[in-house]
Length: 351
Image (cartoon, rainbow, N blue to C red; front, top):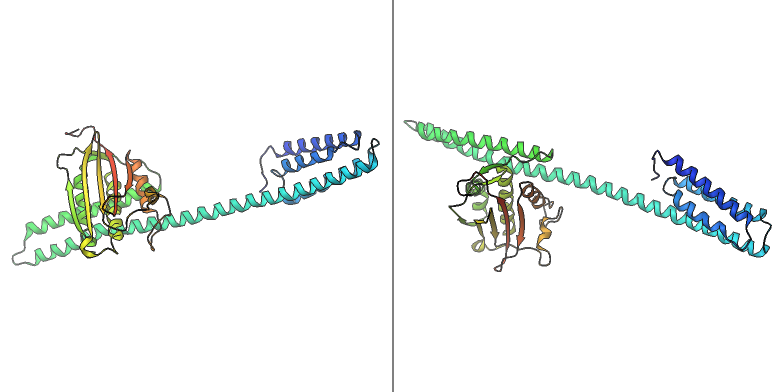
């Protein structure tokens, strides 16, 4: 696509001056000097600022100037001048053809990049929509379950008010959790900075396990919870970190779908490493790519038939936005292990 820069008139003026200089040199020198070949440089330079039609017109003008120069030249052997003029015209024509193909290839690449960008945006919207539906569905399901329990407590004779009050408190907590999820996802799409606060990573893990319990039970996944009880608080956006934990848990469940029920085991381990706290999520599923385990974090790369390959890419973005790091490992016993770490809160009692 030709440039529409304000410098275009100056470029065109410079090209005209160069063409005039080439014509003058070609005319006043000997036939043996093939100065017309320098018109090729003019064609290549003009390809950046002229359309295809303009470039063809310029090439015709260069060929015409070459022919005119041949008839005006009075020095040298006529036959040599004729051969050099024909060669010059061929060079101009071939250069124009190559320049047109080059610009067409650039336009095709730009169009392909534009299509890819549109696909990426549409896929990202679809992935985010799925993420929103999943993240919000968990607290909504918990609210519905708590509401049914509350009805049962109140239906007793006499009503168990204390239990009902506790259930209502859980309903309110889950409702706030759903609102927080929507707020964080909205902030993520708008590029908002994470809301970093000190929180207990162990508690965050246990909450996400509780929300994922129905999915784990439905697929018969046994859970091994190895949480260090003496961990200090971490400094990060709690909701974003829990979204990552939830995504890792569900990915583990999906990875073990083809594994015999007796071998479906999910292990979660927290530990301290200097001034950072790490969480390891390991499954006994199909495992990671042998050559490049980190490839699972690439956008649009997935082994799921129904996946878009953005979950782990978004997870990495959220962890890194909270000054953390996440990596994928291939354990000796098979399966996959995802590990991320977060900084310890400066005001934590065990820091």
